[in-house]
Length: 221
Image 1 (cartoon, rainbow, N blue to C red):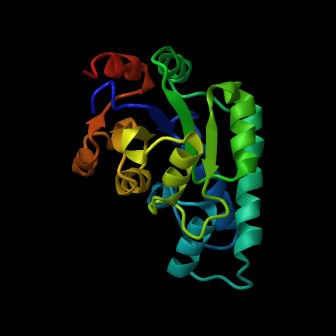
Image 2: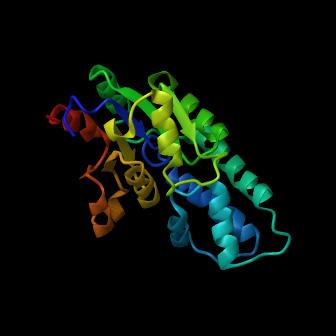
């Protein structure tokens, strides 16, 4: 995509703007163990990028428990995540530099996340970056979350930008599928231990961190 074609950058949130994937994994692990599931921390990566109700449903299908209440279980996980983010949430490396670069290039900035509005508020308040975003789209109340493209399409619509002129930044494979299905250009920034996996080839570009975004934008012809 040329510079003239690029009109907006849409960021995923968890794992892209805030180092929250470990927080999510710890919260899900804690609640699943309290429900009596025999799971390990390594298993938690299986649901990265999914909406919280999809996460709960995923684990219930694998190992059903009594008195299943998706909403109640999801809320317990969300409350744990919000508590952890508010107490000790940390921005991913290069977040502020990336957002400033987008602003300097005159690009609109959006957020497309599977997380609920309560978690979005907790993150944006903790990192003090709300003012950078012209549109915030959550899959919270959509029929389908990522890897369905609807949350990305909604964000592009809110920005009043054609999806083909948007660049989406993702850390999860499910999110990357969603952005590709929305017909957007994509950058994958997977966590380091997954960065060498061949699946990321479906992204148009792969970076090590948001520290490299300004350089990437500068080299866009």
